[in-house]
Length: 137
Image 1 (tube, rainbow, N blue to C red):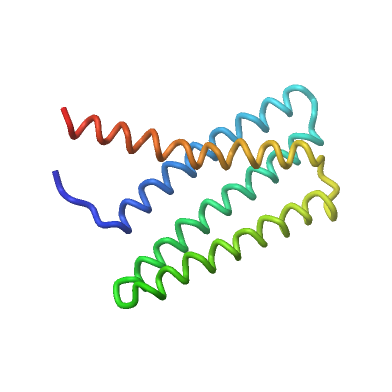
Image 2: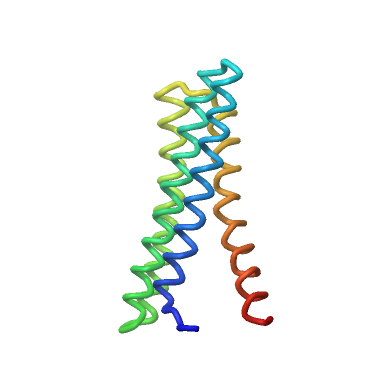
């Protein structure tokens, strides 16, 4: 079995997470549309897209930090911390935009964002456990 680099591992985990996040988001939105709750479906789509965007920014910042850490590990850690702060404010700003300016249903935005975000956290963990079991056997 060929060894993979840290960047490749980040990309694999991130792509898997985003794929499952997108599928789950589409299922939630489809169910809400089927229940004729279009206002909530639009809000759920927005919350899901916020989570997808933040998942993408995490993988991007981790790749950048890895790249920088090769020459300056301390600066690489700084990139991770700075990107976490930026993501936090992006999260708040995007929620404020959706709920305040676009007048989307707050519960649907927040609940879907949390569910989709947690999918992005949990899926890579299960995938890693599955890979470890495969390599052990």
